[in-house]
Image (cartoon, rainbow, N blue to C red):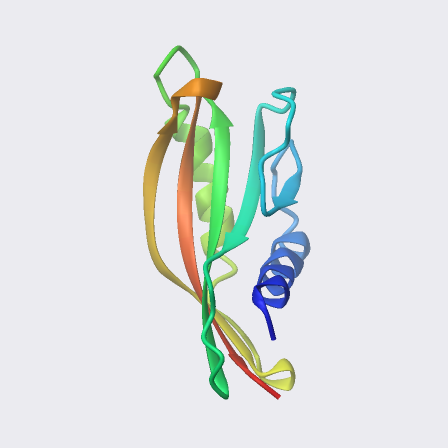
Length: 127
């Protein structure tokens, strides 16, 4: 498997969760326009090539600031809670396990947003 599959698995779980997100879920990059008040970007770091593959997948939850440099903490917490409610994920039939590794809140000052980075650990059996 590659990072593409790890990202696809995480996106499938987010799609099933029926999040209250008003914007889209994007893979590998943020949208080029600034029209959405909130959206999710998913990307992955390189994964191991062993039989038991391990990948770090970043789920970045972007929300427009309420004022300049003032995050919308309420909305960031709501969306984060919705995602954390579906974790951990174990799909025995697909040989995959997804769980939270760590998280943090960051500023995207150029776009007047803050985002929560959820770093997920994805473990898959390389068949």
